[in-house]
Length: 95
Image (tube, rainbow, N blue to C red):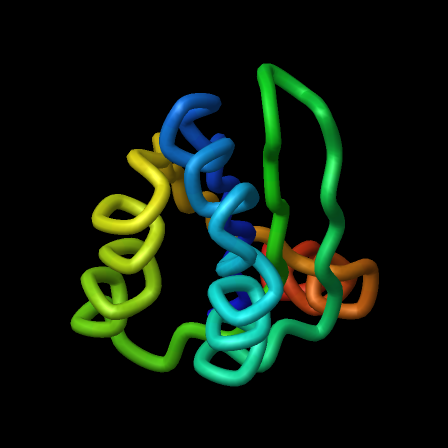
């Protein structure tokens, strides 16, 4: 299932990681682990990452979110999303 993960990074924790030079490695590891089809970075509510990726099983939730909790004190949310083709298939199934 395609998921949207939004990680709002704690300002103090992310400032520390930035000062120590660890942000590129941390973001790079997340990109390698989740293999998102799209990734966006925005100042919404502070430093925020929005990643769109395929989640095959709900057991993947901890490994997706925990590095952001542990390293960046992030507030992480997940939302199932679909693209236009998937929406069309869903609407066609309604009859």
